[in-house]
Length: 101
Image 1: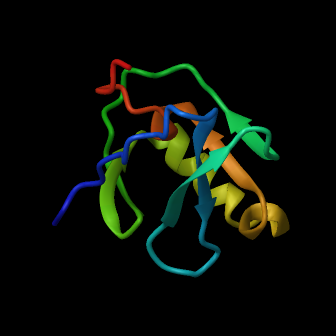
Image 2: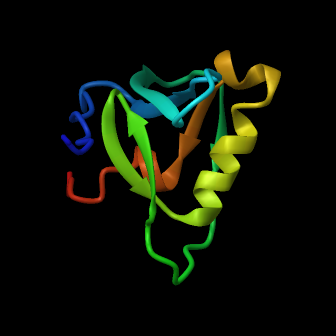
């Protein structure tokens, strides 16, 4: 199974990556897109725990492993009416830690 990889941001204009969480039943699925600033979105940043990333979700149809607390949040988020409409910025998912630019 192919793992998710971030696409580079356009550094010519202020932009971020945003998630949309699918409300469809079954495995948790998200789409990640680039958005220019300003735009409206909801942020999630949290303290990392010692647990290992053990829950498989799908981002743009590619696998990503996340920790318990993030998985639980995303499961709860997809039950919200605004999930299909509101972009979500999650530091653990939207920041490409391997990109040093």
